[in-house]
Image (cartoon, rainbow, N blue to C red; front, side):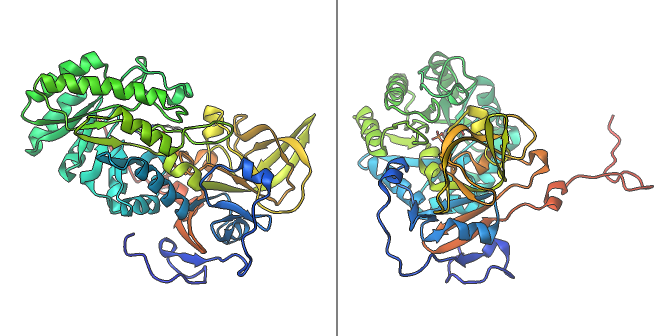
Amino acid sequence: MRGEGGPPSGGLRGRRAGARRDRIAGRPGIARRPLRPRLRRELPPMNHFQRRDGALHAEAIPLDRLAHAYGTPLYVYSAATLRRHWKVLDRSLSGLRHLVCYATKANANLAILDLLARMGAGFDIVSGGELYRVRKAGGDPRRVVYSGVGKTDEEIAFALSLGVKCLNVESGPELARVSVVARRLGVRAPVALRVNPDVDPRTHPYIATGLKKSKFGVSVEDARRLYQLAAGDPALDVRGVACHIGSQITTVVPFLDAIARVRRLAADLGRAGIPIRHLDIGGGLGIQYDDENPPHPDEYGAAVKRAMKGWRGEVILEPGRVLVGNAGILLTRVLYVKTSGRKRFVVVDAGMNDLIRPSLYEAHHHIEPVGAEPRPEGTVDVVGPVCESSDFLAQGRKMPVPEAGDLLCVRSAGAYGFAMSSNYNTRPRAAEVLVEGDVARLVRRRETWPDLVRGERARPPGRRFPARRRIG
Ligand code: LLP
């Protein structure tokens, strides 16, 4: 990934998919017009998916050209937006000794990881697979923290052998496994305990993780006991205290509560002769999807700095959504518009397998036409082709009613969009494109039908089953 510089070129065909960089310029010489006031209000701040002459663009490229070149459904990411989000967040923490470990799970495309690694990001991972990706994208394992309630011996060994910065351990039994694996490898395992500070992040219950009833982390009381155990184990090197209370959090209060609790614990441990070198305060800062009003990163950073006043160690953060959420959109084409009774359905070519957030969390994603053609306003359900009633991108949505063939832009799809996509209904996963100015790069080619059955075996007629193995 690192070496892929070089001048952009014009053709789309005949080149290796992974190395494709295409210049798909907007019409040159057209000055950027101010946005229509109605649109300006609707747009989430700080992103480069804007209208020029009425048509939606990704940076300098009209979205309809991307759809034409790469097909739909298509995830489109804006490098300028991502860089800007990174800079704003990182700058908001200036003066604090900190490491931003991007939550890889939000969007794990190698090109996104590469871009962030180049900006100096560390990474928060939750599986061996994510560590594999981070390494492949040029990320530095020494800037990796490893969270997750179910690490296997194999994953622990992989992380220790690469020398990750810290394992955020989530239970007593896991601590014991880490110790065994470290001894086997002849290394000391850098550990933090992920503490459950029992604060209510006031977010969707499926993405709240810091409550007592949650499966994540250990209680503060259990942590005290486990830190004593860890400190007496020569195979373990106690480094920090970690927490993560949830996702899409839209006020700073729960963060401040959580920080106060982990700081108290760290101070107690220090007094008990167990020095704590870093506090990992997790991710979770929300973004604007609809009418939420999350704190600006500057406000968040200022609050974190205030809460950390007097702390001499390092502070680790694990943001995902706030960096990539509004740096990506999902482009989809309308297949049919149908009415059923009094309901009007806009059937598009992206389904819940492409973007599951509306189905799973009843999440709101702003949807708007890509083109400038006038369309009458109406109320519609935007639904996908998947055979589930929960397959919708929007329900009862007031919007310009599109016609078959129109392109729609589903906003704020950069985080937990492609990352949560699946092959349900044997649907190939979408392609992903990264735009930088007037250059588009295919960073994941669209899956094909043969991709979907690779690894599967059917019994060839009249022959033995090829992968037969007698077990037991
Ligand atoms: N650190 C840990 C340990 C986490 O579990 C998570 C997210 C993060 C950091 C990053 O959180 P963020 O800054 O992105 O909020 N699929 C859901 C979100 C699940 C979040 C899981 N953990 C969604 O689409 O809303």
